[in-house]
Image (spheres, one colour):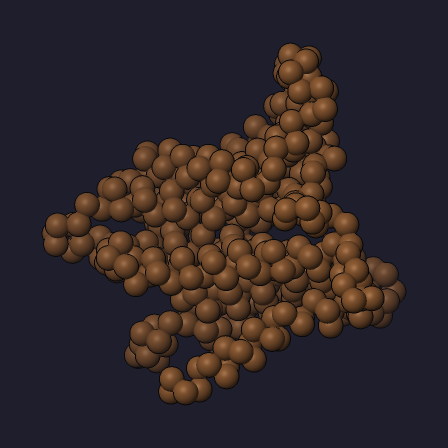
Amino acid sequence: MQNHRLPTFLLSALALLFTPLLAQHFGLAWVRIIDLALLYVLLALGLNVVVGYAGLLDLGYIAFYALGAYLFALLASPHLTETFPAIAAHFPNGLHISAWAVIPLGAGLAAIAGVLLGAPTLKLRGDYLAIVTLGFGEIIRVFMTNLDAPVNLTNGPKGIDQIDSLRVGALDLGHPIKVGGFELASVTLYYYLFLALVVLSVVLSLRLQRSRIGRAWMAIREDEIAAKAMGLNTRNLKLLAFGMGATFGGMAGVLFAAFQGFVSPESFTLQESVMVIAMIVLGGLGHVPGVILGAFVLAALPEVLRYVGGPLQDLSGGRIDAAILRQLLVALAMIVVMLLRPRGLWPSPEHAAQPTAGASR
């Protein structure tokens, strides 16, 4: 078994390295879709810590994504200097703080917000926990929408633009480069950066899963009362799960703001939180490879179905909107997958071995 792992690993690495170069030939839009899918993988890995490992349903996870994105937008755009004369006096050329300095700040801010969210929900379970976390996510979105008066902090529904792109040393990822006569587009450069960060996040997630803390989270997920009876400090472990999961969201938010160059409250709706939850459930709850697969499938499926929605709209004589039809097709695909694979597309081995409720009867 060990002898087959190295060739498989090398082939997978080569495939990942050449994927954007191949996608470039079909249009940069496809590379951009893959980039966004990698960001969703980061979000899904973070939410998997909360939902998959600790069993805590969080419907407001996208709020941590928003915190990271807006933090970088404020520190790497002209918005603050244009709004506050005192800041402009000290920084006449703008703040323009490097993303590499903001990423740990965004992760830290999101972790603090995660702990603050987790603290009042320690005694809540199931539907009640879902409602409270949903409210938290909506509160953050409403704040981002309305913090343009009396002091314009977030520019309200208009959003913040002119956000600096990411830099790696002297390399600006916002501009294409030429390597040996071959042009690497900006979205391709971002792909390699996002891929490296996803690999690091996967390693961290796997290490967490196999650690004592990860096993304690799973004990809480399976039976919290039994875990408490065994001496586990369920209070601190839950807070740690919320904080640890939120750091992934804050980091992904910083990367998203740098990649897009623009943020607005419309990018952080409840639908996004539900989509990330669907990714980990569809892929395989608590199983890192399944979470990655689910994130890629649900991130790419709506874009692929654009090529199906248009022709179907034409067949209906234009009576059915293509965007609505595309959402319907995504929902139907999810229903079919969950009926055929109730444990997820790639469940963990222990879950795959368990019979479903219908099979046990």
